[in-house]
Image (tube, rainbow, N blue to C red):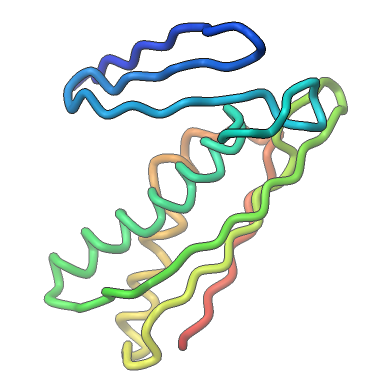
Length: 136
């Protein structure tokens, strides 16, 4: 199933983005370290946000399918840019917090689901992805 996203350049390095099916909107700005003001998510920030939410959503699907409750799970992603060979996301470091009550088998299922999320699968070899899991 294809999903249509529309973006409009508003000037001053700002874009307005529309998720057509839901009519939900977001806005972007260039990052402060690349001529922008950093007033909004940058396009590469959205990739980091996509990774965090993809991990949580994929784990949520795996949990729901097995009758597990991971409400309150959290993901934090640190995005590091690189300029070699050209400007790109060099590394995404994700720290995922899951309930301490999960049994070892459930933990393994959640960690596998996180590692197999579609965003992780979509990023190329030029972007290092480091996942760490904590049980709180």
